[in-house]
Length: 189
Picture 1 (cartoon, rainbow, N blue to C red):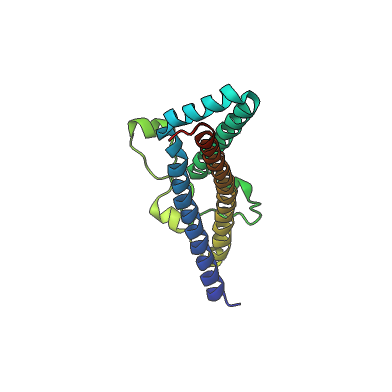
Picture 2: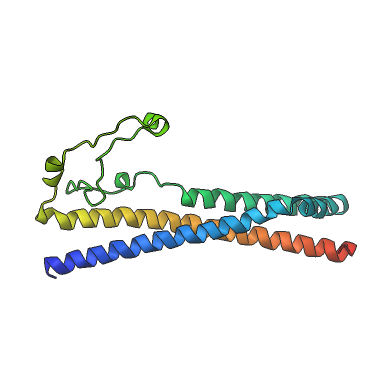
């Protein structure tokens, strides 16, 4: 495969992975909206589980526990999914000394003090020094390096989203079944 085709392939792959990551972020926002809904119905939930615990102590406590655990798991994994993922560069065996120039890695050293007080911040390299990093023969390995980092991020987000979605689904299912049981059992409307 010619060098130009390889670079086109890597750029297309990077764009596709980035699109997938954005899709995961959008889906997880939808999951967060759905799992926050029970908070608006807290009074109803307390009523449902009070009835269950009073009349069916063990089943009521077990159902409430599973509901709370699955709800918390979905919330935790949803938040983890949208948080920044630790430096993916540390997860890659960088045997060719790629520098991460595709995203300008290491150009700025931003610390917590800067985030709070907005002190003057200057790049770690000048334009002329930084432009020396852009060697044509290095571009392919830099693109592969970025593709690998993005793949790590995509895979972590995928697993976290899956756990959040399964937990949210179980939480909703348990909540709805509990509500239906209490509604039928006590003819509450």
